[in-house]
Every structure is written in structure tokens, then in C-alpha cells.
Image 1 (cartoon, rainbow, N blue to C red):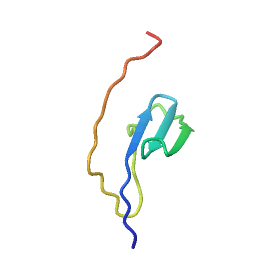
Image 2 (cartoon, rainbow, N blue to C red; image 1 turned 180 degrees about the vertical axis):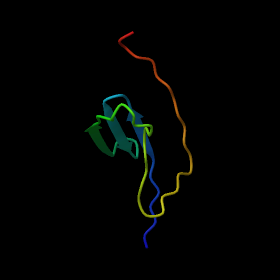
Image 3 (spheres, helix red, strand yellow; image 1 turned 120 degrees about the horizontal axis):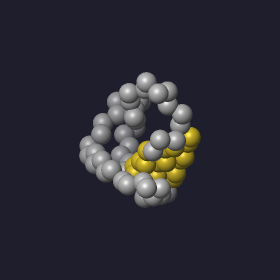
Image 4 (tube, rainbow, N blue to C red; image 1 turned 45 degrees about the vertical axis):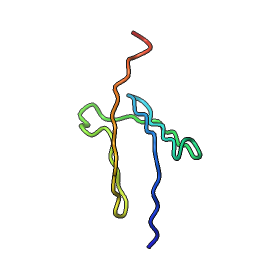
Length: 64
């Protein structure tokens, strides 16, 4: 089995998710439409995933 360690910057808002891997070497963006009663914001899944460091930041809206 191969082991790989990456860094990821993940931006989540009401309508989209943007992921930047290894300082932007790879990126991914997707639209999200969560149901009104959906409680989970972000889920990770896969084979033996270990999150070594996690930081959360709250940003202010540019529309207010």
C-alpha cells in the first residue's frame, strides 16, 4: 500500500466548495445544494484517512 501526505486548503460556503492541493498544484471546485435540514458541512471518506492538522477560520460576507 502506498502512503501519501498532502496539504489541502478547503473553502466552503453556502453554495460551493473549493479545494486547493499542495499550495494550488491541483484544484477542484464544485457547486453544492445542501437540503435545508442537512446538518453536516463537510465529510471526508476514503481508505484509512488521517487528518494530522486542522484549522478552521470564519470569514465575513462581502455582501453585508
